[in-house]
Image (cartoon, rainbow, N blue to C red; front, side):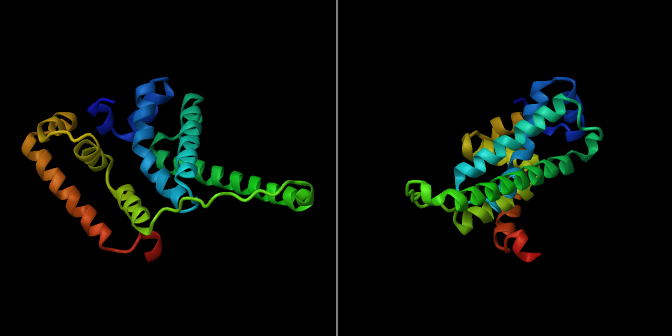
Length: 190
């Protein structure tokens, strides 16, 4: 994805995605994925379930943009949250239905004991919460610096800033992340 798309306001990206621009849709998915993952982490146990939920939300989002269902692009964050809530509610209803079926037909089913689910640690949940509170630009900077091991010059080019500015942004982003990690998780403070 180009750095120009990464920094474009979500309203412009939503409008372009509605006109069929797949790059803009991908940029929106990348931008909202951390928040969706944080939403899912609060409700799901395994990493695989969080990944599947995030992918499902992004598919619904892209489909809605493609079908022109987003009438007010400036309200896109709320639209994404609504998708998350609807999908979570649908899955809860499906679990209830399965529980009812299991109660009715349990005696006829063979015994099955699932393996222990991988539970995320408190630290991982806390880090994901803090990352979701950062701006898209700050998350992109961290991704470039730590996931892709990009040099300051490469980061500066990707973010369309000077190399000195990229270093200052990195310093401020890490300071904000450290400060956030020193506090309680946002949903605990509420």
